[in-house]
Image (cartoon, rainbow, N blue to C red; front, side):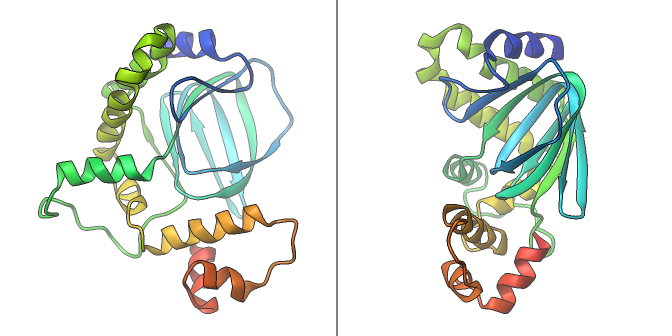
Length: 225
């Protein structure tokens, strides 16, 4: 299954990072080693099909290799190194509205919703790619072979992928992502605000006001995230 997915990515990945005609889909293809890259991760799910990539953010580091799913729920500056090439991955940008609609359909009154531990997991999380997830992602990428099907099927395949992921170790983070007033959501708001104004003088109290937090709460939650 991973071989089929890798072939589909290679077939349609025209550059190192290729945005495609499928909404929120990006393909990553790299055949030769590169020097470490400074990148800005957005909230996304990365399905690593071939090779491996390590990422460093501050004092934290993690590696995602072939057959793994990597979820990032924050706006996060990292240094990324492609440890093994050739590298192939498919990236799904997180759509909080679609995810929230799916959870509402699955758990309309919240009675079946699992308890969410602590203040909410944030940042990068990895999990194995199950055969069901690999199958759904393969069909999602292979929509590029039949562009006439994208409009009708892309949203359905994306929802299926999210549904499959909710049953993995990524589920708690995905559920927290939909909480509009959670600390993680407020940190994302602050991070986006900073990214849009990084060339300007920034005041902590102004950032805190944007995130609807006190400066102490912003510091605590931003550092934790």
